[in-house]
Image 1 (cartoon, rainbow, N blue to C red):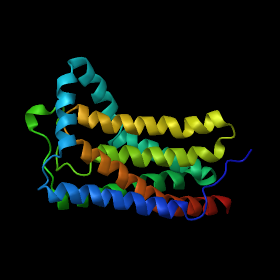
Image 2 (spheres, rainbow, N blue to C red):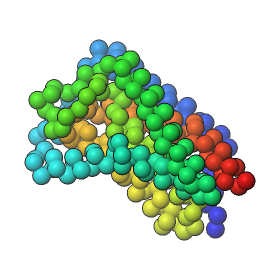
Image 3 (cartoon, helix red, strand yellow):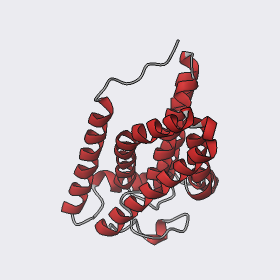
Image 4 (cartoon, rainbow, N blue to C red):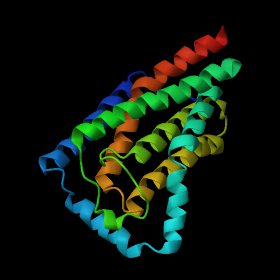
Length: 217
């Protein structure tokens, strides 16, 4: 059984909806002077209360998997899977797409300039303003890319569920780890997830078609 493609128009609609929701989150935060919302404070305080040295080590491992070299390698792997005949081109494209998305996110971070939680609450060192979260954006982009790359190779419901579920759970864990480590407000993470969803739905189909055409030649 060949996996079905999403209906025509579904991905642009998803991209527009995710971008709109991301803009709403940013607008609400900025309207409040970039201060944490009520849900931000409540979740942050709960995370601080529940955090232990053992959990800090676990969260640090999870958070480190969602950025820099590990994330770049996974993005390049996803690109290589899409263009297997010219895997090197797919790998370069996957890595370049992730870097370009991060440049866009970095521009948003500087423009919004939202402060992070108090430094005394951090369980790890961080730089730059908070919104949108870089780890949440990166891991979500990579997770969506991996799911898209693996999906055509899945023929059974279980493998399709694993192809989507495992990357999604990983990205979810990376995003939540940033709140657990005290370096992001939950709305920073939410905005990162929404930004990654919007970018993926808007551009991954174009990248995938281009790579598949190149591989077919």
